Figure 1: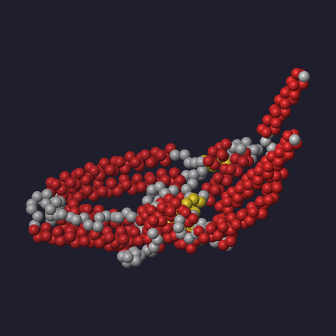
Figure 2: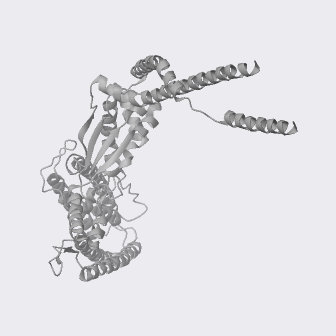
Figure 3: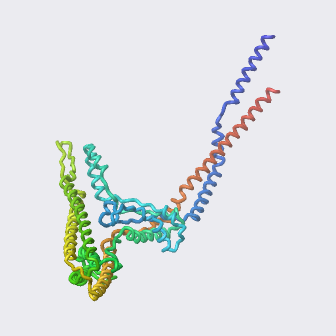
Length: 496
């Protein structure tokens, strides 16, 4: 009797443990989930179609860009552009196109609000176009490396240096409030305004001489004043003589460079030089000793500058003497015993010769000025110490005043003519818009599809996820309900 009770208790314990294991076991009701997918498939399809319609309508209503971003091509063409420099020798920063001054000028010209400045700046992107020469050079080195695996060719390929002279300007107007029709107009106006900014900042703006010397005759002698005017005339003459061989004629002054050269030569000979001779011959000098001291100082100063120029010339000549031109090594096939090489023309080598010529000109200039000042000093020392005649002083003052007016007019005419020449000839193509920006329109439907693709994909993924989740929840609930029904049916006979 006791043994039977013990066996029954043992049997009951085993059954309880099995039930506990069954409760903890997780069953995935695949059949019920599939049934749920089938049950809600029609609702999912209807919702997916509704989402497509809603996203398309929203994109069409609120998207202001139904065309691709307009693209323009600009170019720089002047000496130094291929070295990444501006016309005045500074480093070119092409991002100055996005300068607020430029964008403000463009927006003002188009009548738009200046509140758009930052958005327009952020919408502009600039990419350099690799020059053809650099591409060809890289290709040669790349071919040599791929054929022979030569490390020197690979290093040479990495060392190819280039500066773009053409740039692609893209205007992503989706970052702005402008629409398709305004986008190309805005970026083209920005590029036009940059032309004025570029020339004003980097172009020719050097003025020759002073517009007015404002001579105060009580401060120094007439001879020094006349020498100052003569120096200005020499500067003007040097400048126009370098340009007088062309046929340019200014529309503002009406002068050609030959006309200006003749006018300057005449003023120097009949105004400055003739007046100098009159002053010396009639001893129209206020303080002889002061004049002597002045010219002695000028000679000493010019001697120092000449010595410095000579040392610079010597340094350049030594650099040329020790300079070795670039050698290019050409690697042939694997059967070649040694690579062949040849010497190339070096830009640095050419620059040294140009520097040498300029240094020689400076040395010659200082030597000439020293000679002129020495001659003037000798003439002043020979002047008498007697007081100048009042009539001579009056005559000299009238002539100096006339010389001042003549030099001032020539300075203005030369500067105006030279500036116009550089604007219309030298730097006419320094900056240019090679290809104006255009909106590359596609069909309305294709561009709309392109715009809605990303948001539509995101929303559809969310809808699909909800559809699967609902189906899974439905499957688990159905399975749970069935299990409870089976358990109830199983327990009822046992209780009975």
